[in-house]
Image 1 (spheres, protein in one colour):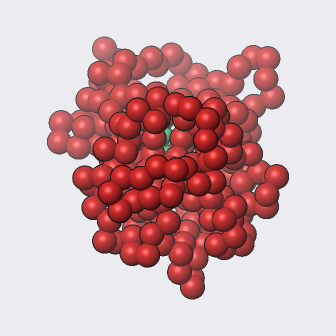
Image 2 (spheres, rainbow, N blue to C red; image 1 turned 45 degrees about the horizontal axis):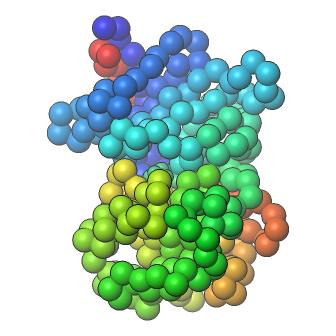
Image 3 (tube, rainbow, N blue to C red; image 1 turned 135 degrees about the vertical axis):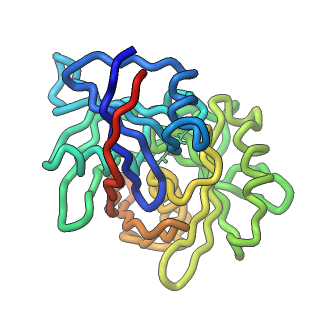
Length: 267
Ligand SMILES: N[C@@H](CCC[C@H](N)C(=O)O)C(=O)O
């Protein structure tokens, strides 16, 4: 066992435990991640992040490994990527499972070039081919979803009243539907005069106060359906992100980060 320093941070209430393992080794089992992420018995977080040295052959400044609350390792986390850029304290090119992401430090906010969205059924992936702009499926009142990959899979439902959706019950049902062989993040969006109001049931984490990739995927789906134009404000329970996307181009996400505290823990 050794003592490791960590940062507790959040992006709009989507909270993270972040270890900086760029200069020493830290490998974590799924069981260790679950124990650290536990809100009663551990530090508590939606996602656990390990900052790592970049691959020797690449051009990135650092690499980032992402684990969900349930211990599963995933490729993308928009809010945590902003937090890692804020921690670095300067613009960085980050190697992630979703590709190279460029982070730019602004005045009180961080912008991430989130890359191209995946709009083909096999990039999500879905279990079989279908039109990702309008999936011909539904779960009770949630029908006609869109699907978008931001390096991680998202399904998006446009509804008249987002607050009325029982996401705590329907989220896990949809997350584990066989249509999504790698499970899925479930987004419920309401279009309003001031942008998009969004609630997210995250794969491997449950209801969160915000989801950066969910905001990006939802903005892409809404722009594809011509419900809004970019840039668009996406309002989540924890705050607001600005998302920009022009069809054919990369998605840009801008929002705040908060450093809560640093600590040390024996692992
Ligand atoms: N909170 C994140 C997304 C984290 C990963 C997600 N739960 C997944 O399993 O794909 C964000 O801000 O994007």
